[in-house]
Image 1 (cartoon, rainbow, N blue to C red):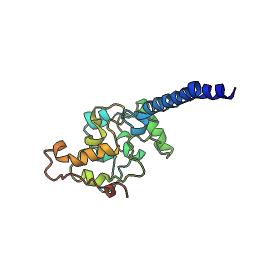
Image 2 (image 1 turned 135 degrees about the horizontal axis):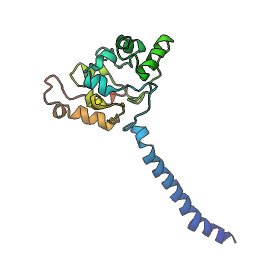
Image 3 (image 1 turned 30 degrees about the horizontal axis):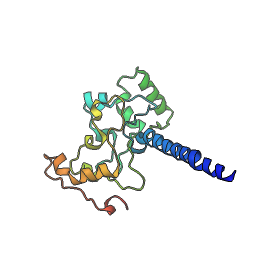
Image 4 (image 1 turned 120 degrees about the horizontal axis):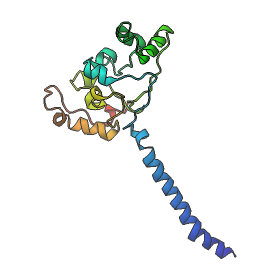
Length: 189
């Protein structure tokens, strides 16, 4: 009896358990890939905001809304007051502008869903990149053609190292750019 139980474990249960574990890992790995590297992440926002209209058609510079990017390591999400600089006057009758105005009048921040995020264990400085003439499009994709913003490029270590090692090839017209550092301490501080 004992031999048949061990035989059953080795012939049926063990392979079935291994198969189930591998299948679950594989399924989870591929299903969660977008969440892990963020590519394709395009969440609904509290207010439908069109970068295509603002940055594309109207040609509003990224730095008008995302202030501090040339001086700070962070690019800030615009405050409601920044939006209202124009929308106290412009297109006030539109449903999304009415939502914006309600946030503004209630003095409540808009809780935008963050899209682009470098892992917490990695250091990234926007100003170092912007001041070298690296356009926002290099990392964030062509937001001028996005009605709904999403992450178009990977922010993995491999993607960053690829850019750091081939900056001259990617931006041949930029005369001040040098290849970025590729030592561990450059990003892992």
